[in-house]
Image (cartoon, rainbow over all chains, first blue to last red; front, side, top):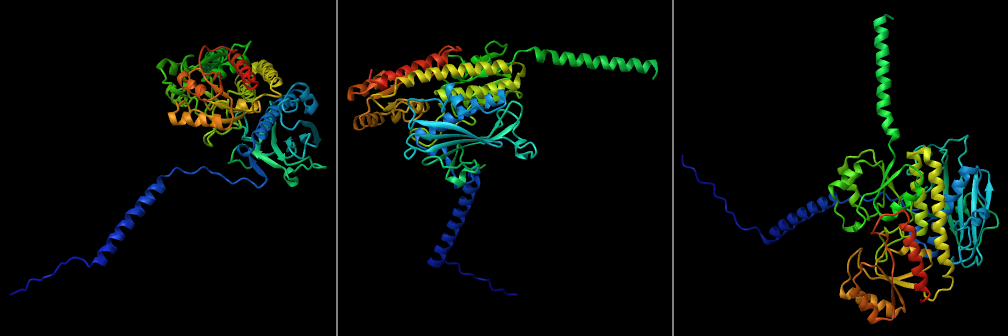
Length: 211
Length: 297
């Protein structure tokens, strides 16, 4: 039998097809690199955006940052008195003991006057500047738990170091809800237990924090 | 129940009671041991536990710079015997995590004093400034935090811890108030610091930070960066520079020669002997330095 060899002529690809093949190969490489890098990227922190009525501590001017820090100090002292005496100290009592921000401070911008307001299980310490149109008002709000309605979110807060920035724990284990608020201008004529409804903004330390 | 069974039961109960006594007695008799990474924490804890049997142990030798620290085996061994340790946790004592792991002490209570502390940003970027301990307000609140945790660990001393912490807070407030009274109408409000470690303290005295000489924590500035500081001092009319003892005097002399700024030394409270009164003494000195500097003395 006489077989003719099967001859196939192999020539260079037309330049268009060759270019297309190169582009495809590059696209595949870039795609692989992209997915490799994207996959290895560190997971971003779970950061929920702040509520519209919240403001970050880090974004406040220095004087307001310092007053917020002082309110944290004043809160700690008020908690001790509440734990020992069973009732919340008046702002005047804290001032008399030299506890900031209730005590007079010659360096404080705005010369604040402090008072307290108690309504049911909520206590509010309110600070209003002498020039209230120029300097913001401050509010420290503490809410005691209702014994008739156990708060399940409080169960995880068992030790002094398991607190988050919205809670404090009394030595008897009682968990309190606490928040610090700022508001441009003077105090409103009547005060609500929901400060955000009256133009108050809650100051939060962590951008991840939503109460 | 037969006589033999009764005897077995009695023997078992006796063994149980003896075992419980053997294992529980030393634990309750041993004093609580609390370690500290930084000098201020040693002072705070020492003041809280004064009058009790609690032992306070610094982890590092006193003359070591914590930012360049390499742990020695005996220091890791020391951690193995601690019940609790007070740490900064923001970058000042990163070495401690590895030491704790190496010590094998899995029952150690770690007291991170900066949990819950509002953090001011560094001057050059938005990262948190870890020098929370150079501050009166933070010192008071963090002392109280330590006190609360120690009260959980040793409830029988809780009242003493509380009383001591409160007395300490009152003394610190006294130091701050005395300085504040002398700064009601200061000559200068704006300053430059060599090290970005004093933002909390400056904020507490209403002082504005106009610039920082060091490009990053502990780094010596280049000639260009030093010139940048000199430009700030000249352009913005800043007359006060706060430096530290460890900063090269030759570089400070360049600043002195090129501007009319005066240089004052602040304490970072980071080296030297560990003593209960170190924090009070050095913060009082810092407050006095602020008063002199801002009043142009």
